[in-house]
Image (cartoon, rainbow, N blue to C red):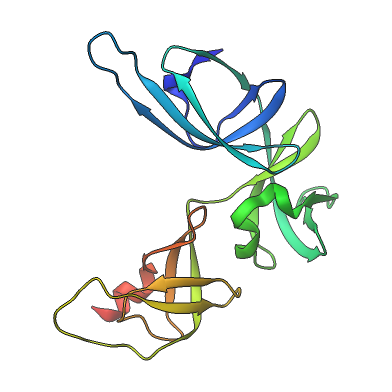
Length: 194
């Protein structure tokens, strides 16, 4: 058990008898006689559904031990995603719904940590940001004035995100996996532009 104020992204907890992964947790300290509150976004590890939950700061929460194993993404077939252990060559399938937004960013051969609860695969630990190539977008624009202009860009995985006007087709960008938002240019793109 740990206090809800200590919840962090990536932790696994049991709530109302169901296992959940913490996708986001924000603690807001109270003032005076008001206690603090933790707002958490949770994903059910059995069904893949998400929910928002509010906890009192000192409320005890049951923490679950999730085993993580390094595995390699092989392929997606329908609603099943296949991963393989590079050591034992054992293969497992995980339902696409359990991967959330991250499923769209899988690339062949990608190495990730697969999460197991009671011996069953329940999810994948994606990095916070992923670098992806822009497949198609409008030509770069260098307009004066309003700096809050964005344009759509289709990425190599088919996902569409909003990017600043200076991003061109073929560039690699960093995207927040959970939010599906542009964060910045990929590291090598920034170095090349200098």
